[in-house]
Amino acid sequence: MANWKKVIVSGSQAELAGISASALTTLPAVSGEFQVLVTGSNGAFFVTGSNALGGSSGTTTEALTDGNGIANFSFNGSAAASVAVEADGTTLSVGSSGVKVANSGIGTTQLADNAVTTAKLPDSTLTSNGVTFAKMQHVAGNTVVVNNSATTGDLSTLAMANAQILINNGTGFTAAVLSGDVTMDNTGNVTIASTFTPTLADLTQGEGITSFTYNGSAKGAVSLKNAGNLTANRLVQWDDSNGQLVNSLISGTATTLQIGQANTNVTTFKGDVIMEDDLTVRGTASFEETTNLKVADRFISLASGSGQAGDGGIVIEQSSVGGGNGQVFGFDEANGGRWGLLAGFNPTASSFTPTDLMVTTVTAASNPTVGTSPTYGGANGQGNMHVNTSTGDIFIYA
Image 1 (cartoon, rainbow, N blue to C red):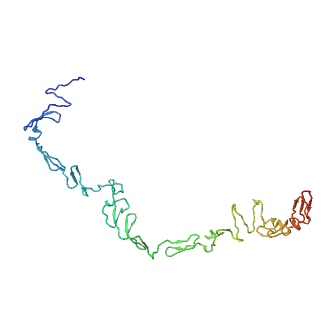
Image 2 (cartoon, rainbow, N blue to C red; image 1 turned 60 degrees about the vertical axis):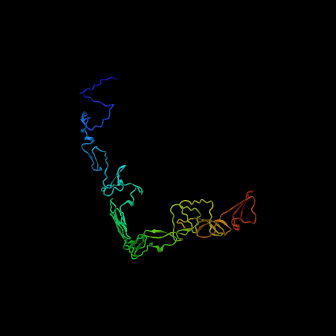
Image 3 (cartoon, rainbow, N blue to C red; image 1 turned 180 degrees about the horizontal axis):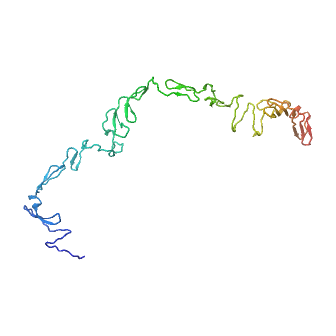
């Protein structure tokens, strides 16, 4: 859009965003001074002679020369010159690609003390980028590299002589040879002197052990107290009053177990006892149940150990103190085999003669055969009966 524009005339002050010119011609070569338009530090234009900008004939008033780190040169505008970096010694190398550290250019002189820190070392075990033993400092022969202190610190070397071993006492290492009663050669073989006698505190007996003392100066033996009285194949038990092991009442072999000794001991079982198989009593069986004896079997076999025919029965004791005579109900085999009763019977006897006989009855649909004897009692079966179930007739053997 249209706007006001300032017309610049001689003597005017103006601020221009830019200035350009066209149809300029090249300045012809001249040897004398000519006028030059320049801008001052405050932005104002000035006209000055070309000699103020440089020497005559294209040269400067003062020459440009080299300083530290620059190869020798001088430039005053009269001729072309180049500026190059000057390498000092063998540390730096100057080439077409620029300035670089020369191969093998950094040595111990260039590195300051403590210049390489732990953070600069790679955490690697690879020989390609790790710090290997081959790259560590020179280590003398027959030495080891250790931290010879009780705290974190620097490594140092410790010389080792023939057959020496490293021993640590908590503050550092000592290289020493085993000597005295125990020695070791450089192949690891250990030798204990035949005269070696250890110094030990006395080892003595405790409960159940025979009296002895052992301190390593001589051979010793440990034995059980009362061992001579212990019987083979017998379990032992602790006798607290005498502080020793003694024979128990239990003995046995690989196939048998015996509790107690015949006719000498009484064995008491506390609590219920369950027999999974048969129970054989070879002596006198006494049952002291305070109420009644319960037998789950339907039949009881008596005198099964006699091996022959004979008397047998059940004795009901009548003594108030126990272990005495009683009333027997039994089978009298000697008198034809009849059941009978006898008072005052001694249960230790092997036979009895009943005073009273039990009457047995045979039932059949016919009369008894004349001349035959009863099944129980035989010829001594007086009083036994026969009942004819067809007629109701009753017969008594008499």
